[in-house]
Image 1 (cartoon, one colour):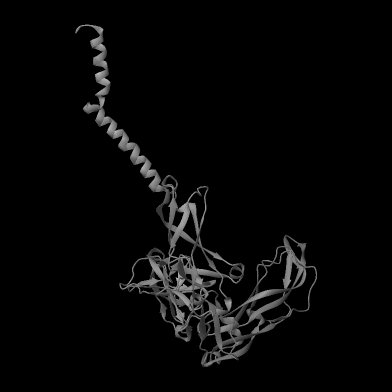
Image 2 (image 1 turned 45 degrees about the horizontal axis):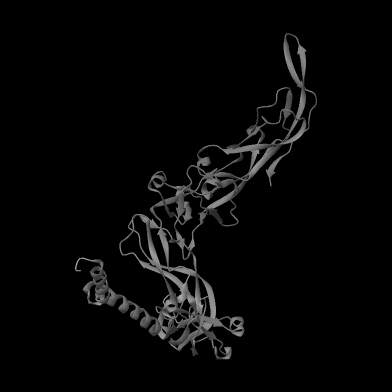
Length: 470
C-alpha cells in the first residue's frame, strides 16, 4: 500500500544514505576537515621554526682587574645584537629583548695603556636566557664579535677663562663679564682628557654697548699648543656644562677732578702750588648718581701748620668714592686708589718771632677763678715767602688762650693757644706748629671796700711758661 507505514520507513532510509549528496552538508563537512588539517600541519611545522629577537642591548662586563685599574669602555662597534631562536611559536612569539642577557667581557692588560691614545680590542658576544621562558634554543647571535675602545676614566675641573670681545659706546663703561658658572668639569678617556690644557668662553659683540647685555656663550677647550679642540665627540669627552650665561653690566661714565681740603692755608697762597696726581679720575655708575657729582674730595685735610721746610711736602691720600660709584681709572692692570698731593714751597722760608706780653690774651676765664700769666713773651715760628717773612716782627703775632673748658681746675695747667698773624703779611704767611701756654688758676676772693666789691686772687704766681707743643 502506497499510503501505509512501510512506505514512510523506506523514505527515511533513503535520506540517510543520500546525505553526502546534499550540497550544504558537503560544504560544511569539507570546511571542517580542512580546518583540522591546517591546525595539525601548522602545529607540526612550527615546532622547529626560527624566530629573531632584535636590538638586545650588549652589556660590558669588566674583569676585577679592569675595575681596579679604572678601565672603562667608551665606544663599541655595536651597542645591540639580534638573537635567532627556535622552538614552539607559542613560546618564541612571546620572547622580547628583556628575556636575554647579551654580554662582552673587558679583560685587557693595563700595560698597553699609555695615557696618550685609546686602546682597541675585539671580543666575542655571548647571549644567555634571562627569564622563566626557557623551552626554546638559541640558534645564533649577530654580531658574533664586536670591537671595543677603552681607556682609564679621568675627570678634571678647569676654571673658565673670559675671552669675550666687547666695547662700550662713548660715555658708557662696560664692567667685566659675570659668568653663570666659573668652572667646568671635563671627563672621559684619560688619553683625551690629558690633551685639554684650558677652558674658555668666547663671544664677540660687534656693536658698542649702551645697556647691560646677557647672552649664552659656548665653552671651548684648548690643547697645550693653544689650539682649539673641536672634535670632543670623537674623543668621547663629556663636559659638565656646554654653555654658560654671561652678563656684561654697562654703566654711565664721567670724569671728575680731585680736590683736597686744607687748614691754615693763607688766602694769597697760589692754588697752582698745590698739585694732585692724578688730577682727575673716571668713575662709573647710574646716570642719576653721576649727575650729582662734580668733584671728589680726598679723604683728609692738609694742615699747613704741620708743613716742614726740611722735607718735601708730599702726601699719599686715599680716594674716597660716593655710594653707588665705581672707580674705573687704571694704572696698568691696577685701579688707581690713591692720589699724591704735592705742595710747592720753593722760595719760602721759616722764621722764629718773639710775641710780646701785650699780644697775649686770655679768653673766657672761669667764673670764680683768677687766671694769671707770668711770662712776658712766647716764641712762635712762621713760614712764608722770604720777602714777607723778612718784614714780620713779633708785634704782628697775636696769641689767644681760651679757658672755656677748664672751669673746674685749679693750679698750673697747659691751655691751647691760638696764634694768628695780623696785617697784609698774614695773607701770605702762616704759623708753623701748635702751641700751648701755662696758666695758673686760683680761687678768687671777694673783698668789700666802701660801696664797691673787688675781687682779688687768693694766691699769686711769679710767672707762667708758654712754649710750642712738640
